[in-house]
Length: 342
Image (cartoon, rainbow, N blue to C red; front, side, top):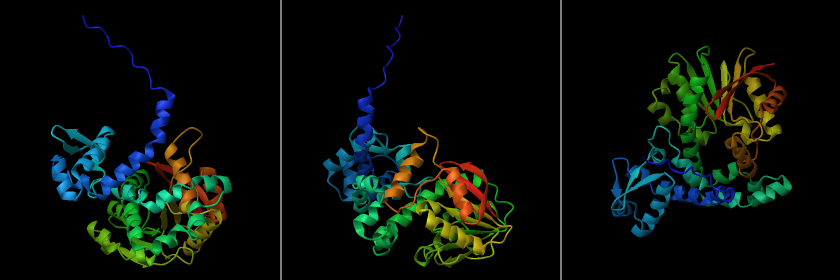
């Protein structure tokens, strides 16, 4: 008669903490694998380390050390003969994945992002934005002067929008609207998802001229270009009129209260009294819950400035901008915060 295996005890607290402390190593390893395009090279099946090294122009033994480490945490799967295969997790590093986040890995592993996070202590001691303190300018102007960094960031934002766009369309009913204006909509992935779900709807994509200049391909690929007008400009100056819904995804969290209210007031000036404002944002959860929004808040502190907010803070912010918060619809890691002109 077989005996039952002895119960396993949970790991000691110090070991769990050590895993958190050493998380930076995993981040940088995923960054390198994504830059090398390893996941794309494994799309059609397992490959040997020599094949991968030849394809990526890397040192075979060193690439093996990288991939075996990532296989140990589930990003890839190591097979016999130093062959590697994709896992469900690693598949998300492919640009053509249903839920791609490889460009985010490339962005967060860049030297200027790491250098900024190294000075988190400065922000905690002073309350200042780390990036501005280090560079004498905000991150938006910094990237505008560095096309490669801006392109990496724009790709990351487009990819990150894909999964959240599906969740937003599933969580909120857009059928009552005839014309949606996406303010700060990047290359149009969020707006494309809304228009695809509502075949009779018209859309306007609004963002900085250099950003929306690259939106045409996204809109064409999703079959909505003929229903979408592209407008360049600054949401601090004016936004397009004529919409009955104004969407902003992950825009307000990039700004402190004064700037956020200014953006909201710009939208209010363009909106009819019966239009609705839809903010797609994270919400700070109650104590001891949902670390993703709270670490995103730290990222706001060190990189672009701004902050993640509670629902009460959004209510006050919206009121200052001329709106009344009417409902909140959870949408994956984000929420659709609906507001009406007050």
